[in-house]
Image (cartoon, rainbow, N blue to C red; front, top):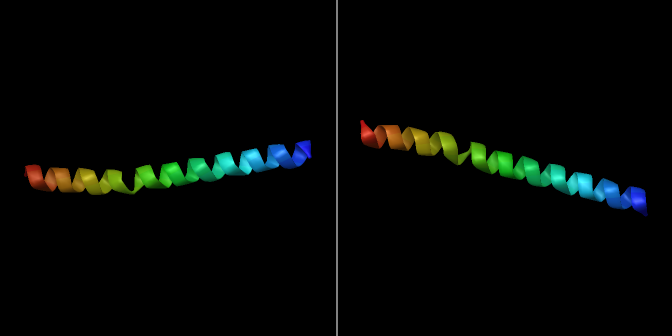
Length: 40
């Protein structure tokens, strides 16, 4: 049970990290591109 608990925690942390990384990486270039396009 302890191993299963630790494994679930690690998997959930990895998934959350990947999702947050992907969510941060997606809008950043779009915002930067639109911002520079709008500014210029």
